[in-house]
Image (cartoon, rainbow, N blue to C red; front, side):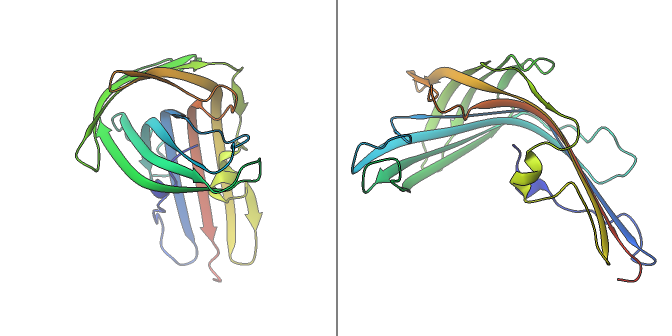
Length: 220
């Protein structure tokens, strides 16, 4: 539930007798929603539909092994807007994507219940890649209990990582401290009411802290 592109390793010790790499990656807040006219559960035959994905997040990264508070970064909003096409109907129909346009903005107006994850609200005017502007307001509201992970959250699987491994050359410890809820979103896009898909359960609000430690043995 985070941006994989920020997971950049930082070397913190000499290569001999061993090299230690520590990366801390923290999301002080993260909310994602999908909305549009697409039926992904049971597409009703050959058709094209429109969908928008919105993510609002605040991230911090640190390579310092003694740092428990990564540098703060501002809130950001990312919008991905595209057409989804199905060439056949039924639950096994595979979608294709086209006509994509994206937008990004720093410092949108955000209010967030970090402790309980009961809500996240955003108001932003986002410049898009086609020259247009998306005026977006969104209100995420929790619809589930909080899911808490001490150090083995499912983000490790999303990153393609394991929590602990040892071989001849490396000792690896990866920790995913995660807290999230399933949420619904209601809002407006350019003045038109929008809401998340009510039955898919893919929208969420999250607060995460990941720590990745890799020790390369001196013999390697």
